[in-house]
Each structure stands twice: as C-alpha cells, then as structure tokens.
Length: 278
Image 1 (cartoon, rainbow, N blue to C red):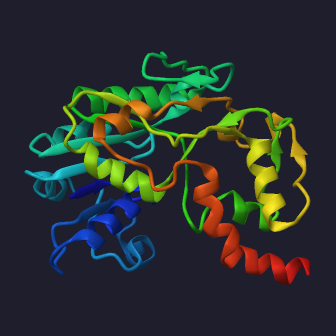
Image 2 (image 1 turned 90 degrees about the vertical axis):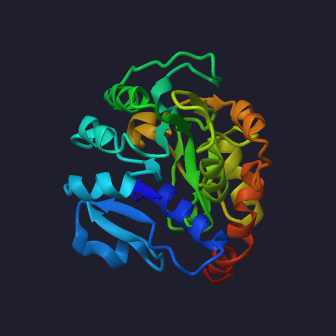
C-alpha cells in the first residue's frame, strides 16, 4: 500500500490492513507527509514508513505494483505530477467529497445526480477528481466522516457544536470503520468509475442532535445561522450509497447514526456527562 495523504480515512484503512494481516511485517505500507519530522504524531502506533511528499523517486518506487489510496486535499500541489508517478500501481482510489454536489437545494443525491460546483471548494474538488479520473482511479465521493472518538457527541459535550440553521437540513455520513472496509473492497472495482458512499439513514441536524441530547439527558445546543457555521455544515443532501454497497456485497457495521453513536454515548462520553451534569 501507498497512501498519498494520511488523514483519518487513510489511518483507519491502515489500521484495518494491519489488524487483518497474517504476519507481523508491514514494511510494504508507505504514507506521504509534508513534514517528515512529524512522524510520531502522524502514524501513532501504526507500522507505516513515511515518505516526503516531495521525494518523487521514492513515491514512484513505493507505488510500483501496489495499491494506492489518494486522500490529498483538492488544493494540494502537483497532483498531476503525482498521478503520473503512480502509473505503474496495481490499483488506484481517490477519496473525493459529496461537496461536489454544492450546498443548496440538492436534497437527494444518487449516481445520476450531476455535480453542482456552486462554491470554490466544489470547483477545486472537481478539478482534482478530473486529474485522478484521467489517471484511471476509482473515485469515492464521501459524506461526513466520524468514529468512536470524533463525532457529534464529543462536539456537543465540549460545547463546540451549534445546530446549523433551523436544523432541517439533511446530512449523510459514514463511520470510518465501515469506510476502511469499503475502501479495501473498492480496490477491486474497474478503474475510471465514480461511486457514492453513505450510510442507510440520512438525517437532519436537529434529529441527530435531539437523539444525542435525549439519550444523554442534556438540553439541545444553541442554533446558529447558516452563514456562521463551517461551509460543510450548510449543505442539505441525502446521499444514496446503496449502489456501491450492492456492488461490493458489503453490509454496514453502522447502518445509521444511532448505531454509530451508541458506543460514544454509552461509554467515555456518557461517563463524562455523568460527572458534569450530576
């Protein structure tokens, strides 16, 4: 494996690879970074060899005959050059975003829905997609990502979450544990295809926040005007990811936000609330 970019999705996939490996040797896992001195913070307990993103020779050698997962931000430099460097790979996936469908009035999204680049971020993401699609990548367009540690529960408890608008906008998500397995299976897909990723239960911001607060026993967080929240929180999209799941024959571990947040509510975050709100 070669990871071009090593954010949340790549780290979870590396954990998935290592937990399912039959040997203790993982010398064939490589990841790029812009700051090679930040090794410990980047890879944590993973056995992954780091490469400088500017070391083109090392990248080309690491990609030869291997699977390559690209999760670079859309504004990352030299993506066309990097795409050429991994031309001898075994398989190639580029992780994109459902943000390519714009922010306004696009409630139901499926494979037939055309992109709507109504903001600079969507335009940049589509431009990056074009580079990797031309290189033969499988494109996975991802919704919101969360896991056991990073989720709406922790943000509510830390006072970092406000309900966007009136809370009626829909949001789709995928648990990172499910995403890691979807990525692994998607390496076998034919190149040059675009797929949507999402769980089986898009829900409104208000519905999710209400569920969390009811389960924990606290008041709803405040509401915030849409223009005061991060642009990724302003969208109104229901992503239909069933086509990819059917293609892969994959059954989600966390098919909806209730299943995905259950552990966060009942374990460490719940105990934190017990102390704070008793």
